[in-house]
Length: 415
View 1 (cartoon, rainbow, N blue to C red):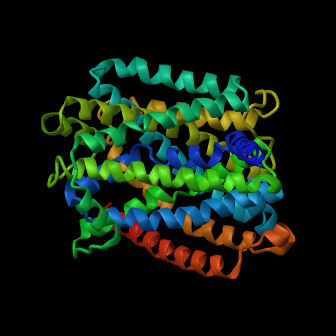
View 2 (cartoon, one colour):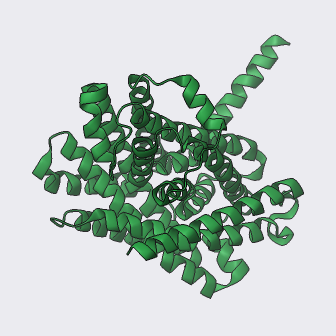
């Protein structure tokens, strides 16, 4: 009896490992340069005051990512394809245009993160050789590898983010204060505080993530019969990603707070004298790994979405001749982002703000689309949302819509 249970448990673990990937990769790719910068700024400027926002963001992302993964498992179609079928080509085309511009802006931010991490390591001017070389590496791995190989490459990049957990421990935090901050919301009548809180939500729940996780589930061939393992993958990925975000805030809160910084690079450099050179190096290494993961994943998400919306062939693991537009969009995103980052003296902070503003425009639309589709029995059958999930999902969507518009108008006012 015990042997049978052990075999069953081992079988369950193997099935989970076979299906795991889309949820973990999507969530950790959300911890790119923009996310790391936002959390670094939050910890350096406001200490632990904003950690509770991560808790709220974690629940919101679990709800929406789970819906995306479920739609992929039930229908075998990507989110953009379902939007086109449910709302028409015009609606899908508008969403894709905004997504394309927003994602290229996001990708530029990620390549800026790669360049910044190289600068911390002393590469300096050699970034003009290193960044294009990394671009070529990403292209070669994604276009020439099988789906499994590309997924393993992404999972390896995910592991690099464990550096932030080590950095957090090196900062010797007061864990009692951390625990209290997670469950005791703190508010400040300060525009910077409000803006940073909204930015944390915006970088945690990004539009491209919904397209990527669903497209990845479809590419992997996960059906509804194996969906329970995919659900575990999604939830565990989100908890892991936001735990890493928490450690970034902790690291900055217990070392460089209170200090006004604007980039993750400044945070990494400031850590050296205060928490030791090891913490600074680990922080920079984490920035490199996270930025490289996002710089690979976001362009793929763009390719998935645009091709699905317009009915073109897409998918990692296909040959270039089988999906030329898919890989063409991927190449365009990579090359454009690389060239912009290498322009001497360009202000990349403005590019990052543009990405956040465009995400703020698109996210409410995508959430409404998703909730309409996931509750359509003609599409989802018996796998529509339950009443309780719907109440929570619509409440969170409404809250995120308010925050997104606030972020957009604040950014517009500051332009």
